[in-house]
Amino acid sequence: MTMLAANTRATIIPSLRYRDALAAIDWLCRAFGFEKHAVYADNGIVHHAQLTFGNGMIMLGSVGVAGAWSERIAQPDEIGGRETQCPCVIVADCDAHYAQAKAAGAVIVDELETTDYGGKGYSCRDLEGHLWWFGEYDPWVAESHAS
Image (cartoon, rainbow, N blue to C red; front, side):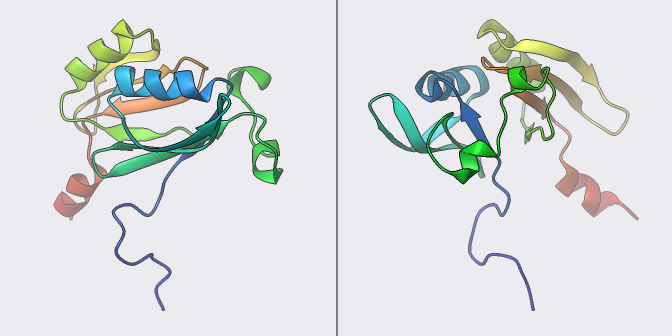
């Protein structure tokens, strides 16, 4: 018996919370190249949003939306800037993506560099401190070349 979802583009979709989710949506699109797929908001509160990047997606919402889910998620500045997860996003041109993110104000954590396992990559923090990694390394391609 398979546990995989049938007929879906991606089976893992990171979810984040932002204090100013509307501003975060605009910034993530401008800085990182995400596109709005769906945004459900009223009175400045984002109840649920979906942003796409190629065949990948993130979901996000406003901090403080009532419910048990929101109570389980801490913001980076509440836990000393640490994270327990980090979205990793594959990009076609890491140099261009790095320049775009940096120009938009992303705080670079690990400078753009060529990795030992292939491709370039860098990590940064977004406008509310969430940690992201962007790079050219594609584990799907690397897996097909493994012996």
